[in-house]
Image 1 (cartoon, rainbow, N blue to C red):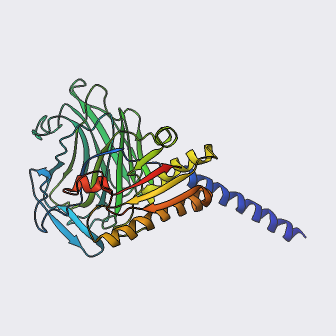
Image 2: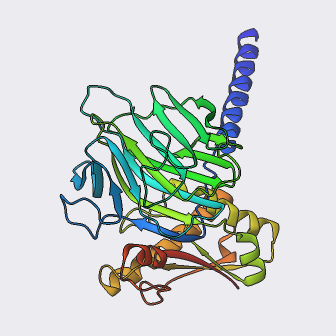
Image 3: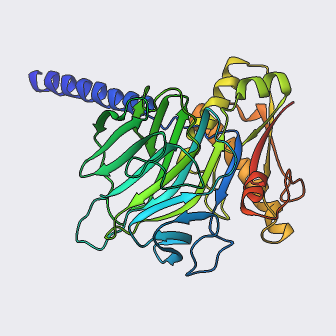
Amino acid sequence: MKKNHLFFISLFLLSLQLSAQDENKIVSKFDFIPGEKIIFFDDFSSDNIGDFPALWNTNSSGEIVTIGKFPGRWFQMTGGGYYIPEAKEKFSDNFTVEFDLVPMNTETIDYMFNVNFLFVSGTLSDPNEGGAIPGKAGISITPGYEQVNWTNWSEKTEGYKDNGSSIFNFTTGEKYHIAFWVQKQRIRMYANDKKVLDLPRGLIDGYVYNIFRIQTTAEIKPIIANFRIAAGLPDMRNKLLTEGKLISYGIQFDVNSDKVKPESYATIKEIAQVLKENPALKLKIVGHTDSDGDDASNMDLSKRRALAVKAELNKTFEIDNSRIETDGKGESVPIAGNDNAVNKAKNRRVEFIKL
């Protein structure tokens, strides 16, 4: 009897522990939502293998490469220096930056080091403005051994102001989806489904931050892909309930696949929340593609992607399937010309239409 009593107590405690772990997992879910308007996109498909990408600037060297472990085209930064996407349009007070990253180096070191991610208030045509402390103001985020360090600066503080760190380790040779979310002074950094930094005063007030740059040293050779800058914070609730239509770029898929990427979680969660708070609301999900590939394949892919989003709403958030219709338009309803990477990215979208 005593053994049985102890067994049930142990079982009860284990169930509480698992429940707590599950609750913690839910709380820490990826909450990044991309900006509403794409202002820069580069998947390096317009550049030849071996060339430096045309939409970027550097004082060093780099080239477009392919790598067997990770499909697609990648931009490898092969020399120490700065690498700047030449996004001509202003970022606004609220914007996001996303890209895939694989840390690589010439040393036998299994973690990422000597790679700095910077947000700078400065002149895009003058990368050397400010010298060692770029621009008029900025923040530098630097992954290192088991932690990510940061520091910010400005002219009005006459140099460096604040600094800090957070625990996270980037492993050499592994793929990460990196995302930054800027809301005025607040800056958040994500790696895959983890929030690495959340700095409410990370950016110094009174400056317009309109430059993102990556800095490396000679022994570091990271590769990046699918680089995107988007401005504005999407008002999903208003667009669904009042305007009756939401165009979303926050739901992403593997290339030529209907597999929903993990970084889509927060966007789908927001839509699910609107549905839960409005029980009478019904939606049609419509998938769209760019013009790459043949018409029939794109039509099929767009339909399957819409179905995948519906399945995620049902499986993860328990939204009744009867409240959702799906359709796919393939490449037949573009909202921009399919003439460059930015416009193609605008056409690859998921729309939610109020029924």
